[in-house]
Length: 196
Image (cartoon, rainbow, N blue to C red; front, side):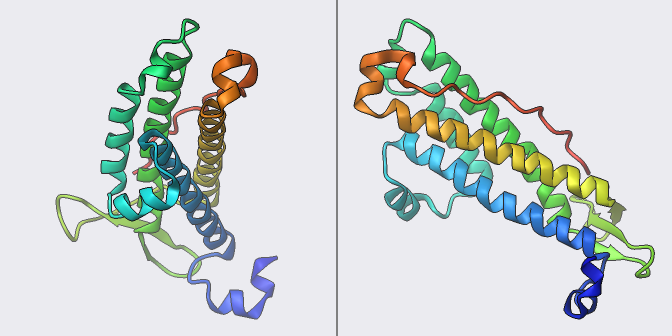
């Protein structure tokens, strides 16, 4: 279907379906980066504009470590609750950082790959991190790429659920009415395998 469009056919060095899947991976990655930054913003107690102005140059790894540290030291209004809400939230946020990191590695292995071979038999390869020009094949079938994009979509949904919970937690009525005024924390998606 995709290769019937002349522009797509002309600009697809690999099969259009695989190239589309790589585009979907990038789309959901951008959404997940924004989601993890929103969580960071709420934990810092800043609006997104101020957080962006102050911290936009942080690498993903540094941002993840900062979120883990902030989650471990959440403000006291979250820590004194008798129903364990703070511990559940802390666990959800820390799991989100693990999920983000696994997805980051999978996304990077695809997005920073090179392609080699003839048009009918194209392989994606990455350089070995220790040997600058030693290439190795990476899992990049259409099924592999679609699995990575699905995992990123699940990450986005999980981050959105945590963001909704954090925003609701900051509403004045939430503290007065406890868990009845809060949405549930999202269910944890499976941690994806790191594909290399």
